[in-house]
Amino acid sequence: MADEASESVGESRSRALIHILGLPAPVLQHSFYDHEGFIARTDFFWPECGVVGEFDGDAKYLDDDLLDGRSTRETVLAEKKREDRLRALGYKVVRWDWKAVTDPELLRRKLERAGVTRKNPRRVA
Image (cartoon, rainbow, N blue to C red; front, side, top):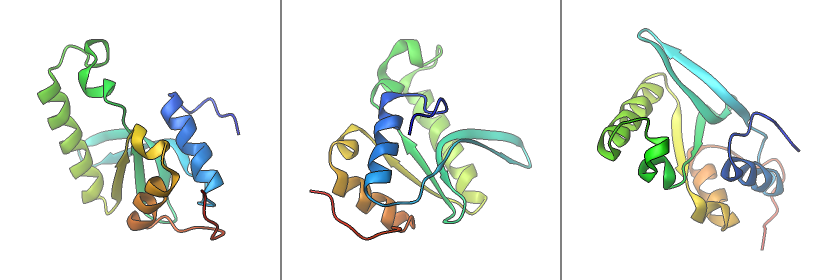
């Protein structure tokens, strides 16, 4: 299941859980565009479900090295605008963090509520 498109441990762990949960495999690092141009390269995309998934650790908003000179406030606002543009294209956006990748049922519920349906309905303890 190794894939060089995974950009973090959290993304790799998410993919492993998605597989274990019997959910369809997502497209990794898919780029989206609208009339304004490039919107984003997302962590996960399920085109057949119209769902975009994002794994975000706290460091994305708190680690100065990852903020590229922006404040946390500016980073959160940019993420909100990015997400609004994805939704305007008709996609649902679901986000999760480390808690969800340590609680398989939480991740399953988040993805299923967004519309990512199971291939084989089995539960993970």
